[in-house]
Length: 208
Image (tube, rainbow, N blue to C red; front, top):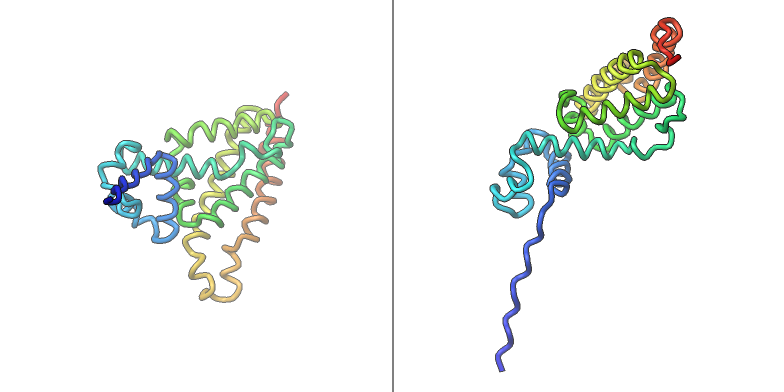
């Protein structure tokens, strides 16, 4: 009796989240320039048009990646970012999370660091951070100023670090250390001290 032919295995169904995760893997392996809809579809074994079921365009795909990078920061689950945290510790832990993400995903991190503030994934993240700073004792104005300053510091430093990490070993002695992560951590301490002295204590930036 002839054997019954087995039905072909069903093709797995992709999700927006899985697309973002696959895109991050592609970026980390081959760089940001490798991220195209066609290349990602080829990596996943799908037709390029099938990806548009989940993302409208490459820009929308980038938004999905940024959303996942924010999630990977883990700030929403960090006990130190609770409303009872001191604002200095909150800033320290937030910048530490950015540093750890840059170390884990140095090529993808740039998409988050340079994402416009008004994009769909970024704006809620920033507003939530401001709310936590206010809950930690800062006034609304000080919370926004402090977030703007520390975000600019972290984004600039870590993007430069991520881009130059592969060439740091060839730089002159003493110069490479200006970009290492120990210097980033020292900068956090200096910035917090300066913000405390100028915007919080000196400028009465604490909530009444």
